[in-house]
Image (tube, one colour):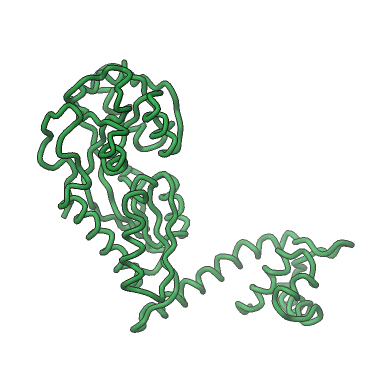
Length: 325
């Protein structure tokens, strides 16, 4: 089997007819038919059933389709990896990260990476940490930035810690539930109306775990799985949420939202950068990882990642987000 044969096979399968496939491949119908016939002869089975409306995959064709896509993806990755070794790397690098991180760093990351590698395309995929991990294990990403979970212990994953990050209670500047000034003890989350993502989202698991130490349950009034909507509801006074300060810094500075530190216990999570052995670690991939780490460190040094004081003007510890390493 040759890669060109597999590509032709997949295009015919997607198109449903040889005539449409011929147009997509700038070829002729007889030429495509000969290629498929040669492939069928080599494999000893029919790959398509001919119908009055075109062709559909046979059982053997369906099985080959699964392998063909993987082989073509591997070939494309190999090509990109070899090209990336040159003096002027080309190709594409894909990074996945949670929306809370992308909101803060995506623009700077794209700008810095383009300056370093103008001929390499950078693709950014946003999602919750669980989704990002799924994309990484499926080899859809070169690099993943996510919050540490036990699921990151796979044999194919290499994880480097970046930051120890603290979570805060976030609410309307009008404080409709009268939370008051100063830090909030975790047991009070049983009385404050909360807007949180559903399980098994990482933040929800951390909040639930913290509450087990208090012997109470968090007062979750609404479950919603998008950060934008959580913040909109909090700003509208319809509940309080729990996030990192970096996610809401601009809204807090504009006095549209207010934050409270959670204590007894504090709630922290580890931000990590992860790669998989299923994708080659090219020069652009290594550079992207370094650029991301430098941007995080810069935000922490400049005080953009941690609040200097809480809404009640009670001083926080000097560094609530700590760069690791």
